[in-house]
Image (cartoon, rainbow, N blue to C red; front, side, top):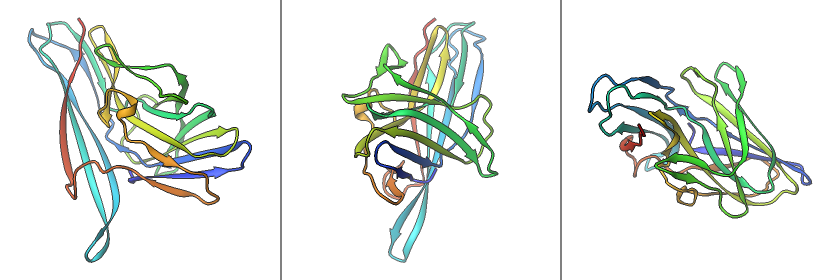
Length: 235
């Protein structure tokens, strides 16, 4: 994923906003049934971004990879589970946004429409917690098609505003979790428990396309970072 979002405003009333990013997630899915008491199961999900940085010798590209290792507590024998690293993208948009659409195209130019659920009142993230939209915003949940092959995709999110105006946006990448009777999304980037805890990036109307930088995945110039989390599983 390029460490930036390219934003284009078209028109003023209404105004069409188009955002383009390049997520490089490793599609990975595991499923099964535990075979013994006390067995723990899990999945590791990775996201990679490339950032433009300044060094003493000039401009350079810093590639960072963040791996999230998710595991359950010990489970009973016979517990079904299914974990998918390519869960929906949950993004917080202005409350007056409408006509929200999303698509993805790979490097070969093959395009596919993504499923968008707008004005989601909340999103379950496990242990009874939920992501909820902040005041004057709405949640849009963008889901990938099943069996998405590995690769680099240009994701294009577009929506309209009654009039062009500045706004702040947040986004959370998730893994889709099914374990026992539990069904929820696990935030992996950033690993937050509420939308206000996710970094917000400011977007302003402009005649030409603008770029909005995204936060680095690791401190300083580190290339790799690994974090861990515990998955809830209700029998």
